[in-house]
Length: 66
Image 1 (cartoon, one colour):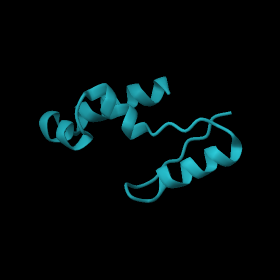
Image 2 (cartoon, one colour; image 1 turned 60 degrees about the horizontal axis):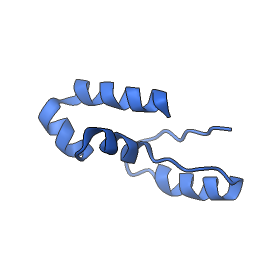
Image 3 (cartoon, helix red, strand yellow; image 1 turned 120 degrees about the horizontal axis):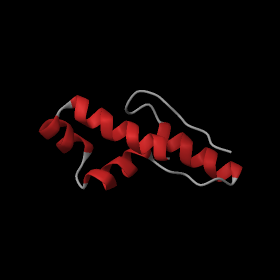
């Protein structure tokens, strides 16, 4: 079973996701953490350096893999 939480930044996706995963006995993966691991820098840094289109390409790739 996979569950994806989608919403605006700061809306509580990570907090709710961790709690939900714990209650359901599932693994929790924070997509932002996975993206930053792929990039080797913060999302903010990459966004500023490469721009939104490049960031969205990386984000989409990571989400597809997850």
